[in-house]
Amino acid sequence: MITDQERKNMQQFYKAILSLETEDECDAFFEDVATIKELIDMSARLEVAKMLDEGKVFSEISQSTGASSATISRVNKCIGYGSGGYKMVLDRIKDK
Image (tube, rainbow, N blue to C red; front, side, top):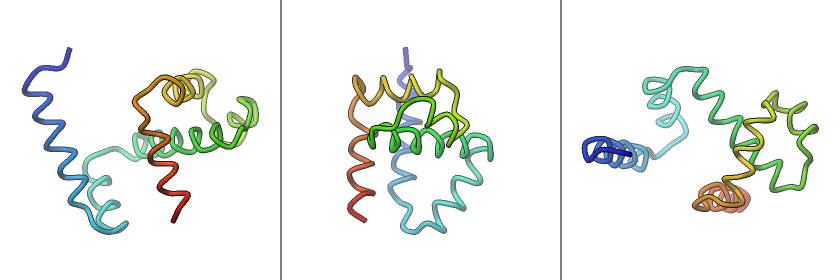
């Protein structure tokens, strides 16, 4: 259960992200706010989502990204039953 304070902190974090205007600003902010490992993991999950969206199979995704079967399964579950965040983002970056 997320507390009210945690929810406020998350909303502030989202607003901070939405204030970023360039890739350089994103790089500077995320380099400060997250570890390199966290950034690598988050970006790998997005790549897993992209590959799943393209119809790639788990073994191919694992070999290409180094992601575990647990990570691939979790991303796949989010794509199928989540709030639609991966699909929304993937659709938007496809257009660019």
